[in-house]
Image 1: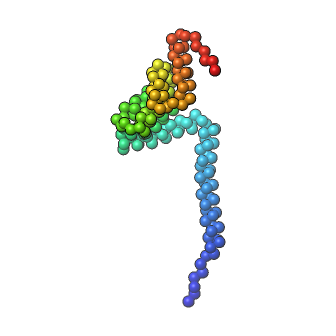
Image 2: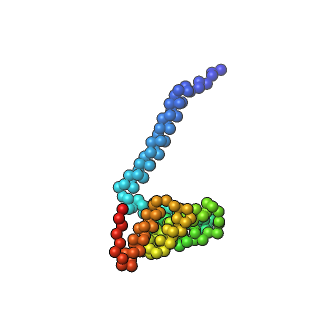
Image 3: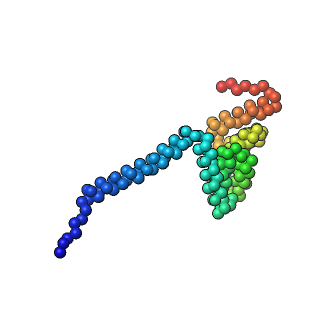
Length: 168
């Protein structure tokens, strides 16, 4: 009888450690590559990210039509591409969602802030201001939202020909 010799556990541990390092290096390389693409070609990278997000959300919405999170993500992709009309349509659909829970009310307040930003990009400052008020009333009561509201008031005043100046 010839007993089979088992491999040395230290060699096996060394091999597994080397394999782990190789896997980590490959993963870090991919992350570094994505970061390099974002820095070297930000416009192209953002466009690809928006296209990817749009494709993913389209697929999600074919299986779960009316999903509020998918609609919101698709709206963000549309806004990133500059298609504010499509973004507004998706945000309106998400806001009109029938669920009425505390979490959903807070989420809708955030959606109002997002819709307000899209409306401001289109130059509809009065509607954007109404959405900023709705966002604040719904619980998005943060300093940034108040700054946006102040900026909208200035833009609205300029739209009507008022000489406005913001003094810190």
